[in-house]
Image 1: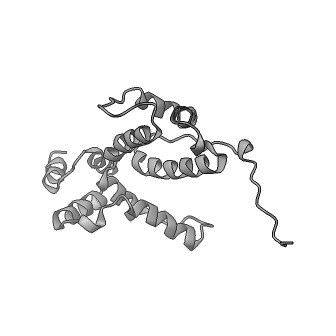
Image 2: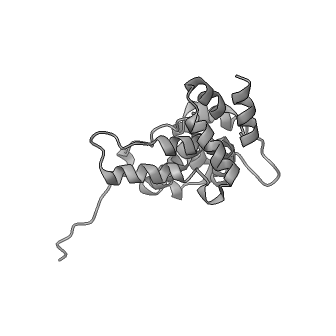
Image 3: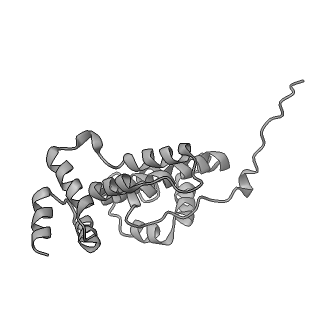
Length: 179
């Protein structure tokens, strides 16, 4: 007889994932939430259910804001709002464009170890933020733009720069000159 008892999880009593936070960090939040959702489906056995049950369960737990977004999705030929893979793909599409590389780089550059935070937890947080920074694709102009945004003295000016979609170095310089 084995000395190791089998692991029995109370799958039906497992709480659902926390709601998806729909904010300026949506892409990163979605990436993490989706991983938790996929584990939740496995542990609870939901993944064995038909598409409609899986999709309905996802919409029950995701968040009110995300359901509002779901209600606006346009479904192309061959896609279905009742297919879990199609729904997840639509959320991938919806969340991905919201990544502001400049904002993610700002977060990365300003991330500091919190009091009581272990070095392992801090490095993990840096890695999570770095995933959305596109450091492997950075150009010299982007480095200058990032430094300009990070180094500007006026906090309100920095916030304004961080809100600009597809901020280029020349746009950033023009904004700073006209303030």
